[in-house]
Length: 597
Image (cartoon, one colour):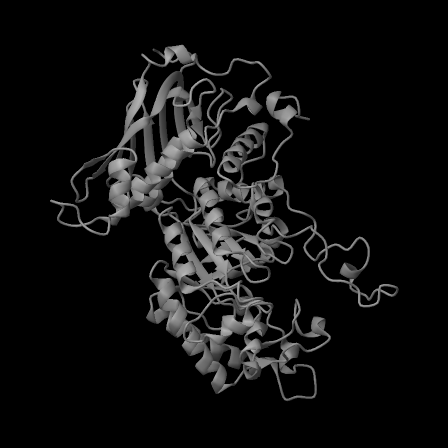
């Protein structure tokens, strides 16, 4: 049937027709207005034109059997290709996304409005019977000046009016993203337990990310965040096309990560023996992310934010638990690695030679921290002989050893902006600088010629605006710190709502030469006021707003279309078991145009 509305060409903006609410928004989309159906019997055909023969995977049976037994070659197969597993697993997740969750978008239409196609027409109507996924070399899948996106993440998706469905990608990551987009195109039908449909065939999508690094920074040290919580975060991230989960794995307050060569670190440094990530937990989370196109990498923050080490080795920490803490640390308890100490250097060598090679099995990045080094800890400004130049030289020595170990395992290092901008350290040329304080810091790093991650606290700190988390020592006479007095605002207030996050444009005012050095960005979930119980609502749907900025590029204004698409993603995440916060009042979703001003 010819399209009733004709084709609608989209470049970054979805048109006003009632299209499926994809998130993040595809770079290019053309579509019609015909209905195509899908049932649980849909099959996957995987073709690797680069080397491997094609295979047909049936739902559940053959596909799951191959995935679970994939490390062993099947009969007649010469060499196992792990990308088969990635694609098969993504296909099975997509089937569950469509048929197990059964999303019917009632909230997005007026009550009693007939928004679904007639179910009695489905039997003889076109169906998607096979999804063909082909890995091949895609032409034109290159990055723009705005970022350094990898062509490996690009994909093309087609669904014809007759139900022929195909995805073409350069590698398994692009295929995974394409399969997730495919799943988002379909709705369950309220009158059928098996049938799903889309009403915009034919569909053609050409898509690729604007930035190579699209991440969430998750703090697992200030409050207990279990490995199972990280798994749930990864599931939601996958639907938003994030590709990096940065685990801030240690801090002054606790050390939750088990290091077999240093067993006392977590045994004494964690809040409780039940609040420790084992090596098996870490491997599980990292492999789980890998199957979803997400690289899970670690941060061990040095030389600051290390007081938890003192629980097992107090001799390694200068000014441990010293009061008043606010003089010696950004947060309690005070304490940093002792400088000029052979014992500290030996400790770091043991720690990093244990952890970095395990991280390197699944990740090419390792974060070494470097933020908020407090000079008062080392006696600057007192009667001691400390000078900033002396402190700088000793911090350089610590970091040089860490960089050397990371390089040995072929890790690209990431550090916070202070090591470059405040301490002027000599850093490896391939080190990525993570900025967090302002766009001015971003520009300064770019002027120094380093690749950079954006994510300013003014826009992308999800912990902000929930109030101060410490109390006045003398309530009747609060001190000078405004956080200890009404209205008890935290240091990075106000709250960053999803529209604030979506409107963030770190590229504003940057030259094309500077933009070329931007690797991407991360949205930050610090957990002073967050734990396992509140994590979902703190992250979602706000982190998803950052995901679209990272995928499509910056500069897209918030519109009612944005709100409705994000609200639909939120409904799908809730069906996944993610306790995501609200996007919009239901009346506004049911009455399009009724809440615009």
